[in-house]
Length: 107
Figure (cartoon, rainbow, N blue to C red):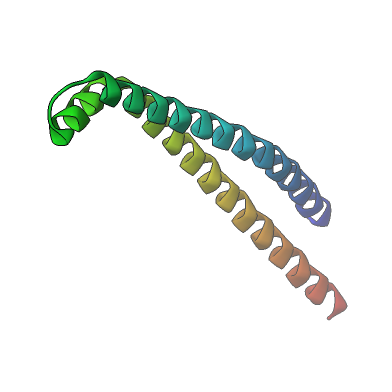
């Protein structure tokens, strides 16, 4: 039982390390998506004519697909963060189980 807990902790720690790298990659993708959206909206705004409100509306319409890509990138970052929290919770649970088993062995 103790070796199973140790193995589980090792596996969770390894997954946690991978998760940190996955979070960085997802955040970098999000940053690029936000840059792409900002650039496209500014370009679209400048190329339109009319009132500021009309130019903003046209720019938003022209950039809807880019905004969608940015929103998907945000969702990916949130998904990785959620997975990391789950892994960290599982690590804490395994550590608690290990301490309880150690306490029982001393009795």
